[in-house]
Figure 1 (spheres, rainbow, N blue to C red):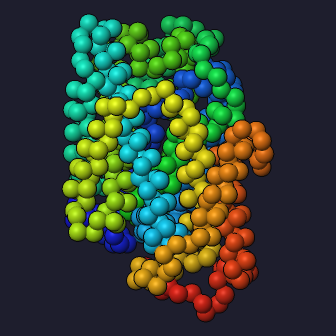
Figure 2: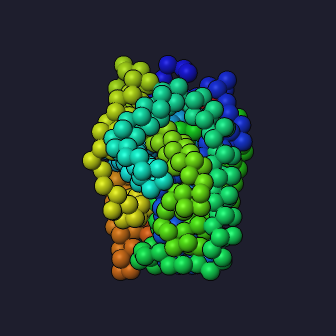
Figure 3: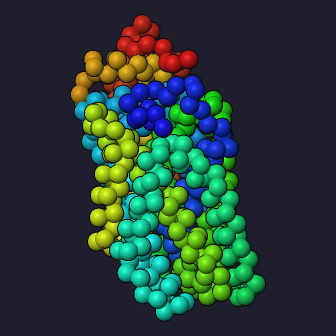
Amino acid sequence: MKADDFARGAVSGSAAATGLHLGLIIVGGTIGFAVFVISSQIGGALGYAEAGLAFAIGSLILGFMGAVTSYVGAKSRLSTYLLTEFAFGPTGAKVANLVVALSLVGWFGVICNTLGLATQEMLQESWNIDVPPPVVITAASALMISVTAAGFTGIDRLALFLTPFMALLIGYAAFLALRADGSEPLAVEQAFTFQTAVSAVVGTYIVGVIIQPDYSRFAVNVRHAVWSVFIALALFFPLVQFFSAVPSMATGEPSVVLVMSGLGIILPAFFLLFLGAWSSNVLCLYSSSLSVATLMERARLSHIIIAIGVAGTALAYVMVQEAIVDYLVLLGITIPPIGAIYIVEAIFVRRFRMELDGLDGEPPFNFRAFGAWFGAIAVGYCSDRDLMGIVGIASIDSPIVACALYTAFQWRRGLQINGRSLLPEGQHRDAQPPG
C-alpha cells in the first residue's frame, strides 16, 4: 500500500475502487457477531413483524446517513479525521476523533472477546475440547492485524472473497432452523421496546457510517460511493439482521452460532463466527489507525495498526459483554452528531472548499461544533429515556438536533443562509476542491 494509505491527505485519482467493491466491504462489515446477538435478541423480543420493521427503519436511517457521509468522503477525498478537523478545529478534532477511535478500539475488543468465549463454548459442546479464550483471541487478532496492515487493498480483497460466503451461511442457517422448528417465533429473554430496538440497530453500525469517508474517498466517483453505501445498508443490512434473527426466533436459542451447532453444521458455524469477527474488526482497526496516524505524523500507518491491534487485543482479554445493548444505544446517541456536524460544515459552510493548507489558519477549537454536539447528546439521552424528543428515537433525534443547533450557531455568527452557502460571497478561506 501507499506508505500511509493517504491518511494525511487527499486520495489521488489513481487509487480508485468501484461501487461493487465498496458495497462488499460494507456488507462484510455488517455481518459480525454483535449483529448476530442483537438481531437475535430483537427478534425474540418483538417477533417477526415488529422486528422486521425495526430492522428496516434502523437500516434506512443508516442508509441515508451513510449515503451522505459517503458523498462527503468521495467529493472531498479526505478521511474522517481530516473532515472533522475542518468542523471541530485542528485541536478540537482530536477530542471528537478520540471518542470515535476509542469506540472502535473498544468494539475491536468486544468482538475479539466474544469470539473467544463463543468458540470455547461451541467446541466444548460439540467435541468436548477446551480451548481457552485467550488462545483464540490472540490467534484471531494476529490475522486481523495482518490483513489491516495491508491497507485498503487488503480490506478490499478480504471483502470480495468473504462477504458472499458469509451471506450464504446466514441464509442457510435460517432455512434449516425454519424447516426444523416451524415458523412460530419462540421468546428470547431480553427486554426491548420498539424504540430501543431501532436505536440498537443504528448503534450496531453507526460508527461505520461516521467513518465511511475513510473508504468512500477511494471511490471511482461520487455516484458509486453514494449508491453502494445506500444499497448495502438500507437494503442488504436489514436482510442480514432478519436472517440472523430467524434461527433464534424459531428455536428460542439467543445465539445464531449455537443454533447452527445444534443443527449439525458446526464447521459452517465456526467459519461464520470467525469470518464475521474478522471482517468487522479489520474496519475498526483501519479507521482507528487513520485517526491516530494524523497525530503521529512520523509513524508508518502499518506500525500504528499493529500497535492499536495489540492494545485492542489486550482489552479483549478483560472485556465483559453484559452491557453490549447499552453500549450500542450509547453509540447511537453520541456518534451520529459528529457526522451531522461535519456534513453541515463540508456541504453548506465550506461547499467542499477544504484545502489542507488552510487548516493552519483555523482556530484550534470550534466551540459552536462542540455546543451542537453536547446539545444533541443531551436531547438524544432524554429521548432514549422518554423524557423529550422529536421523533422519539434517540439515534434519529441526536443528529437532527446536531444539524439544527450547528446551523443556528453558524447563523448567529453572522453567516447567511441563502440557498447556496452559509458563508458570505468572497469570504471563503479555502481553495476549490480537488478535481
